[in-house]
Every structure is written in C-alpha cells, then in structure tokens.
Length: 343
Image 1: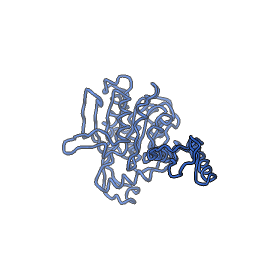
Image 2: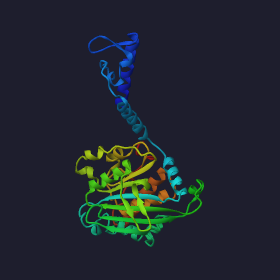
Image 3: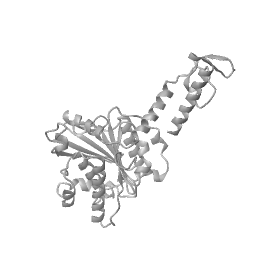
Image 4: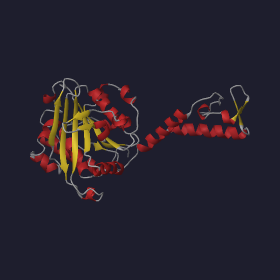
C-alpha cells in the first residue's frame, strides 16, 4: 500500500509539472515534448519524463492487480463463496473439497504415517466416521462413504474420494436448496510435501489439477473443486519456496483455500489469498494437522456456518480430540477471512 501511495504522489507531481509548463514537459534533452507522446510509466516516482514509446498496458494491469489483492486481504464474510456453492448445487453438482496432504517423517509409508494411517490420521478417521462415537458426538454431518481408492508409487501416493449426502438445514433452504445434496472430499497424499503445495497452488490459481476416473464418471478437480487446501508439515520451516510465489493467477469465480499445519496464517495467507479466493481456515500456533480438523471444517460448511462459527467449531474440535489423545488442552489457534486473520 505504501508503494501505491508513493506512485500516486509521483503522478500528482508530474501532472502539476505538466500544467505549469502549459502543456509541455522537459525531456532528457531539455527540449519541449508533445504531451501526447509522454507515457505514464516514464513519469512516476518524480523521474524525468521520456518520449520513448512504451507499452504501459501490462504495467497498469499489474498495479490494478496489486490494489485488488490488497483490498481482498481484508476482513470478509463468506457470502460470495456460499453463493457459488448454491449455484453449483442447483445444477446438481456436489461441493468438492480437495485436500493435498504433505506427509511428514515416514512419507514413503502412508499407512504408518501420523497424518494418514495412524489413529487420528485422515484416512483412519474418515473410514470410521459413521460409527465412531466421538465423531458422532462432535459433528452433525459425518456419514462419509469411500467411493474411490487408488495407490501409486509416485506422488500422489494415495488418491481417495469420500462422499456424504447432506440434508439441507434452514441456511440452505432459505437459499432455495430443498433437497439433499452431496459433498465430496478428495484426498491427494504426497511424500514430497513441496510438490503437494505446488500442485495445490496450480489447482487454486490455474484450475490445473488431477482428473479422477471413478468408473461411471470422471471428477475434474480443476473444473469442479472450488474448495481446496494444504494439510501437513509447514514446509517454510525448511526454507523459502520462491517457485511457489511465481505461480500467479486469479480465479474467475470465487474459491476457498485452507492450510492446516503449524502457524500457516503467518506463512501462507499472502501466497494463496488473492482476489476471489477466500481464506477458509488457517492456524496461528504449532499444532497437529490430523483428520478431525477436516471433519470439523467440512461439517461447518455443510451447515452453512459463518466464518466465525467455522473458527469456533474448529477450535472446539481440536481441543476435544487433543485431550482425547492424551495431550494437554490447547488454546484457540484457528483464524480465517472473516475472523482474526485480517483483523
């Protein structure tokens, strides 16, 4: 924002110079210059104007994007996201979450990995979600059914798809959704955690993602999944990732992104949140990115919860399952676009 103000001041000074000179400015050769030949990008930052022809379209577009990006990174409710989801449901499309999991430690063995195959790992928790009393007591929408499973020697090592039928509550009925709709949760599991982050970013900003053939139909994640996130070890603790920062793009329709790992609010929100991208859930402390976090997040969206309610529910679930697993009760750690991320 400071850079934009500096540019604006430079432009105002330049304009004042033009007026004072009665329609001409001084070039580098101190000769009068036709105003029609002066280009804005040559005159900002109090520099001497030049008559050199320049294409300023890209520069102007870049400045506009910076402004829009900064405006988007302010407190926002999730109304725009829910409206797109409502439109999809009315077209008989499921709401699709895609979680890119970066396995930490023994990533070559997902079945024995803390984040995937162990008791509170994502796979184990979603597999028992229908019958586990702790899950039933904490989440209203938990009847997950696995409809696709694939193993690979290369990343993603696992591709798993779950489906859940949701009975619309008052929130959805008031928006015209009267019959049951489906939510699907796609897991893509990676040994290479940075590749997981990069693939998620390409999905988010370029609509470039895996197409899954589940038999009777194909799931085109790039086209159909509007809500996605990275779950796992925060790879910025292992050093910077400039390649990720180079992936630019703004989706045409609203999307949402979440990042569940250690202190993701401080590392990822500026990389992933941009115009038309809502920050659905981020963290402010060290934590365990286990399966109950996604059970809570998706259950909250299934109920049409506000941003603050999503944060409240996530904090409640995290405390419950941490204590259940024998850990000390933690404090609040979740934030999002609507609550405390940009406050």
